[in-house]
Length: 79
Image (cartoon, rainbow, N blue to C red; front, side, top):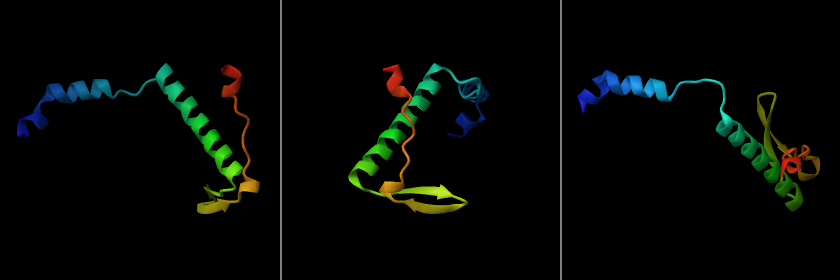
């Protein structure tokens, strides 16, 4: 087991695999999907009358369903 952590080949391969460069198309698509999921969650909470928790000025605040602001869903234009 000790040899695996000392193997320079594995460390080099790991560094090459985890390099941080400009976001590729997959990363951009993941961001779009995440934004879509947040939009849908806000819509569902508002429709069902459930409050949401948010972070404001370093504290958790509860936003009542009638106060939930749903941003325009730009992804619907792309479908």
